[in-house]
Each structure stands twice: as structure tokens, then as C-alpha cells.
Length: 295
Image (cartoon, rainbow, N blue to C red; front, top):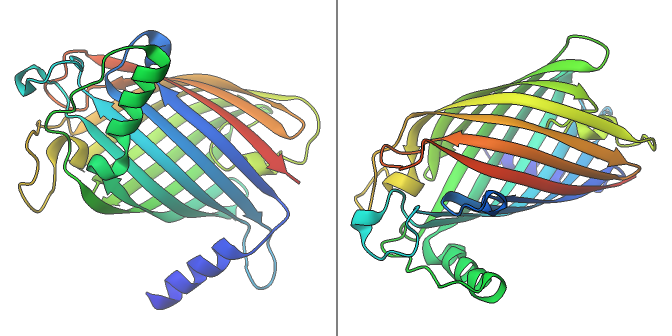
């Protein structure tokens, strides 16, 4: 175990030439909604490690600082009997290493650690944003998800299958094992043009010409535990919980545009219910990201 963490730390702190930084924002306000998975902000830093005798196969190391915010549909009510989703915030730091096993086959491992509850700053950020920028009332955040420290382990396999010169089938097997969530899932999608799929950017990042891509996909996840709806797996610590939907899907489509060292990505997501009480059958969220490559 000590050797594993030493290698993980060594690869993460080394400096290499091919790097990128990305700002991504998820929000449902683009569709005049504000419920369930309400918003997410992600700041991501990546480095590509080229293959050599010491390190071995090419790798991409990434660090992500992120915050996710959740709230019920009737978000201004302080009566939990009106709630179809708990108030919740999840603030975390993520570190992953993705290894290129073969030309179109990747393996990723990593960890997430962070905080839920008031320590996530979700209530403070959401209410101040609504007050200052939108001019609407603050939300009560009654019986929010309890404050706790969490650790998740990430395992991920990504396979890219060439169908034609510009069209690829992307298959992703992923799992999270931890106190914040326990899941396993599969992502399937068609990618046309320059890759949208995560961490494949570096294989085209040195190109200075204009590159475009389009993506249509389907995510299917099986949830064994979801702290944001159920509270702790080990103790009855949550004042308000809801029985989860174990099988969930997300229909997604989008495009990306890369001009020199800048890349803009826009992805539409349509999520199924997370729990059995949600009033709406699905939830629309738009993901916008801006990425810069340093070469």
C-alpha cells in the first residue's frame, strides 16, 4: 500500500511539458429550472506523461477541485413533507492517473476526498448567489445532508473502437467505492471528429488547426449507496432520507470546438430520477467547459 501511494505521489508532482487547465460548469438554470442536481463547478488541471524507460506507458495525471449542490423541487419550502430531494452539498478534491494500455485502451484509477454538509459551503454559495445575482429569496436548507468527511476510490476502463475514419464508439466501464457513493456503470457513445471523451484531448492537443467533434451517448449506472439521498451507510445520521433508484440513466449529446490551444465543450444531459419521490421523471442539465492547453 505504501509503494502504491508513493508511486501515485511521485507521478503527480513531476513537471512535464504537456498540460491543460479546464473550468467546467454544470447547471439547470439554462432550462429555467433549479432542482435535484442543481449545479456543479469543476476546476481541473492535467499533465501528460510521455512513455519512457522509468515511467513506462503514457499517462495523464489530473487534479480536480469540485463542488456539487442539490436541492428539492419545492426549494423555498421549509417543510420536509414537501421535499422530493434532500438539500446537500459535496465539496471534494480528486486525483486520478489514466494509463494508455494500448492505442485505444485506457485504465484510470484515483481517489476523491471531501466534505458534505455546511463544510461543503453549498448553502452559503447558493443563497448568496441567488441573493446577489438573481435577486430571489434564500432557501431554508432544512434537514440538509449531514456534515461528514468522505473518501471514494475510482476505477475506470475506457475503450475506443474505430468505426470509420472520423467515427468512434466509446465504451467506458466505471466504478466508485466509498462513503459518499458506491456505484458501477457503463457509458456508451458515438464520437464524430476530434475526441470529446475525457483525457483523449492530449492526442490532438499539439494540432494548431481548427478541430470539431460531436457526441451522442447513454450512461447507465447501478447505485448500491448514495449518501446524498440516504445518509451514512454505517449509522442513522441523516434527519431526512429518501429511498434511491438503484438503476439510473443519462441521455447526453453535445459538441466541442478546438481552436489552437483552446477548447470549448457543450454537453446536454437528461438524467432519470435519483430517488423514488422525485416529482419530475427526468432532469435536464447543461455542461459548459473551457479548456486551455499548454504545449
